Length: 121
Image (tube, rainbow, N blue to C red):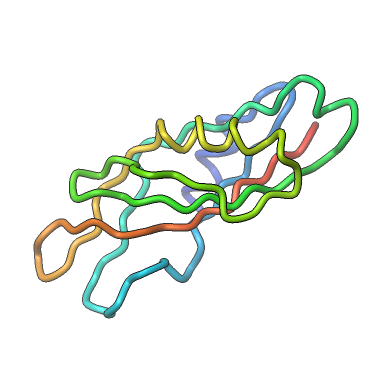
């Protein structure tokens, strides 16, 4: 988890710091024999320009399928503190890539939920 935070600090833009943390509990993993997917490419979302004038922070939780090749499929917003942040969060998540989850030595598709925090610097 610490390596992800360091990676995200390098992606810090002039307007927004997007702290993306993978939740410790993976959605829809039925057994403990499954190794969770690992992000290998993360793209920070960009908040809309008007967001910085009105607010200082926001949170969007995105659920998606990481397929057996490590691609993001079917991203949806589970909850959001500000509707204007939903599209930037989805756009960024679609660009992420993962080392796929593995069960019994075979790559498998799993659902993942990730909170994305937007914070104006």
